[in-house]
Length: 201
Image 1 (cartoon, rainbow, N blue to C red):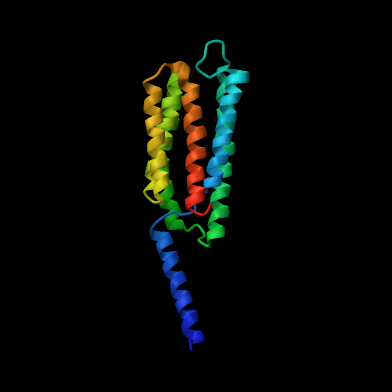
Image 2 (cartoon, rainbow, N blue to C red; image 1 turned 60 degrees about the vertical axis):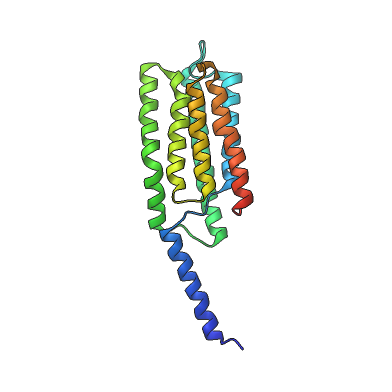
């Protein structure tokens, strides 16, 4: 017959091991469903550019309004994903801990910071047709780096974004909006759906 005290100690040991691995190893609370919602938001941004403002680099467009629409998409998407991370970490019983959160931030921040600098340079110089390559490439690089401390599909998603940035660079600027839809829209939907299916939401 199992000793209740030994069973309790075993449970505590397992909990300690799980928390230690969480702090030192992988970030598992990747919210697939939230990534899918971010994809929907990106497709809404593409639709807004197509129907209302024009792409930021299109002739006769309103660049300020077009860029503002993408800023809104970014803000809402970040909020959705952050909330999804919090909810999933609670559901998995693995609350976010400082060491792992620092690892994740250090992985993501450099590429995103460079993306911000390049976006500013593109806007100031009037080379707005560079934006799809900058956004997709820097985001993809950030996701690849973040994937080093997360589940494998995150790394593959980052590689897909980098490939999409290369495709955007190799095609006419008029297709930039389409590549943004493929990357931030459909890649988020497909990869987010796969993560939700294989990694508990």
